[in-house]
Image 1 (spheres, rainbow, N blue to C red):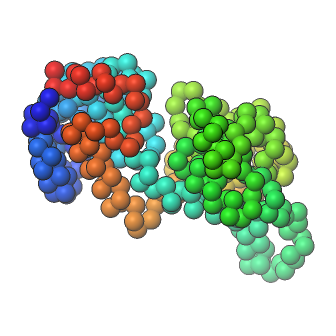
Image 2: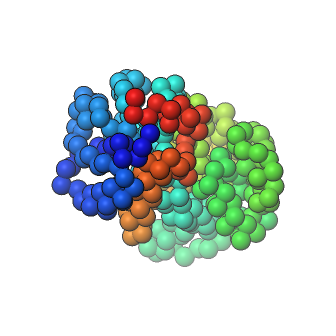
Image 3: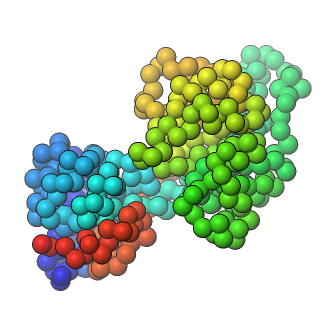
Length: 335
């Protein structure tokens, strides 16, 4: 199909958003740009009737019901690292490729995960609270792990987890990981040992969760997993809140199955003010902040444009989530 007959759509809740950069890039690639307002599923589907690839600036859900109504659209660009707002299984079945931005906030999320590990290891939040309360008792904060020579376990071993492991090794942490979809040789090249989930949980002093959210990972970290961890272990989650059974996490912290947690994501965001996690001394909670920096928005926009243009040119973009749908989507492009 000629790029000149491809229509790129931007689904947005706010039609006042600047799309000048997107228009210049898309038209330079020989395609047409359409911007439409999508306040609900019906308006989203209607706006996509003459669109071949869509940028989900709407930040709405592409569930199975929406995807099955996409007669022409063959690709969805989700301008974030997470893509749980899209039913990838339904998209693959329907011949629609899903494209995310795997590097748009990688450094920020990695830094946030490492910051949690360092802060909770050193008990900085508890120490600050004690000093403000007039308590000066450094030995009273023991036990504090040495970090050096201890073990970090990564749940998931994608781009963010790999870089988290690399930076953790700078602090002389041993790094192990669980990811059944990664070739062990990839981990070995990074001096990381791939293990079973159970073994990672048992061996780790720090567990950092980087699992994507999908029907298979929902609540995959629950009571059974927390009970396998060391009582001194620290759990960090900068991925998605619903990967973790939050009620089980609360019990784990209350009952001493694990020592502490650093959470950038929760099952409900914003959380209920009465959520016990917000009041626990051994828990740090941040407001889904991990991917945020001054550099993130322009980088995110640039990478989304690059993904759109790559698809228009028939090139596989970096963030192809479901490569099994690629050939079918390209064959049906423009039908």
